[in-house]
Amino acid sequence: MSALLDLLLGVFRQPTLGGVALELASLAAPLWLAALVGLIIGWAWRPRWALAVVGEAPPETPALPPPRATADDSCRNNELVAVVPRTAVAAATPVEDEGLAVDTGDLMHLRRLVEEKDGGPSWIHMMDKTLPTMRYQAWRRDPEGGPPQYRSSTIFEDASPEVVRDFFWDDEFRIKNTWDDMLLQHETLEECTKTGTMVLRWVRKFPFFCSDREYIIGRRIWASGKTYYCVTKGVPRPSVPRCNKPRRVDVYYSSWCIRPVESRNGDGSMTACEVLLFHHEEMGIPREIAKLGVRQGMWGCVKRIEPGLRAYQIARTAGEPLSKCAAMAHVNTKVDPDELITAEDKTEASSTNNAEAEKPKHWTGNIPKVILVGGAVALACTFDHGLLTKALIFGTARRFAGPGRR
Image: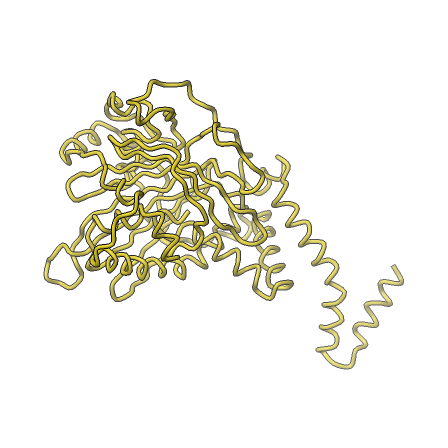
């Protein structure tokens, strides 16, 4: 104890305030180093009691559904699974949907999200940004027992729904143009040439202190007039073996509605296109830190989408052939708009999800979360001079920047 007092007295005998600060920093360095090591180890391995402290539910292995009959030979080995909670489907699943990775129930769930009648919590407004040819708005909500959910509206001027649909479906162009520079690999595992349903494997880049992530996703498009409902969700495929690296993400949902809207030039023309995105996933990063990263880095990543879309429009105008993924976007299920409205009217929801402005929480609301986030930010700024913070912010924010930026 006396040695510690002598050490502190020696620090405060420094002739200048800068010298005192420098000595204190050198004394605190071992503590910061120990905390950093603990933080990294905690991300890699967290016991169940630690998950409860930070308000997370321990991950569960998804239950595999019983085998079902396939729709046809081209759709063989698809499993019908529900990875998102949803209320009762208004109508029975059509026979042609049986055995598909994405079915009519997923369409109705997305439709209720679009109409804000899914019965979930209210949306909290996060952001409203505008460029000359694009407007972007974002919302967030925090359901109990699940990861944060994000909703965004992106309006592109002078863009057709068909081209925007193909743009987000075109995995080859994502890599070629690098507008989505997190996508490292993609491969098609299954496809149904009758409905356009696909099962794909993606590998996406994460910040340097995390392993890359692997996604097994099912996706499908429904067309209702000029409106397109595009569903993408995680599906279990035991036939694809798991690896330590990349780490597989099981809880995943990223779907959007693409529709024509009135241009803001004031002439009443429907030459603009709106993309409504709904996204959530368990990416293996503490939720409070992920939310901080998304909020701080979202707009910087969203701005990359618009020039990518314009480059895609130029390529299509020049007559470049469609990639296989983009061609599959043309194979979709036609839905009568009146039938959609009738089916939705038969489904009752418990609330209308009115949006509200984001309100600051009292600092005593959840002290463990404050310590977790504050410690992570302090460590990032101290040891990496902002490098760790930047990697986290931009690495996690790109997961929610736009449709398919997973």
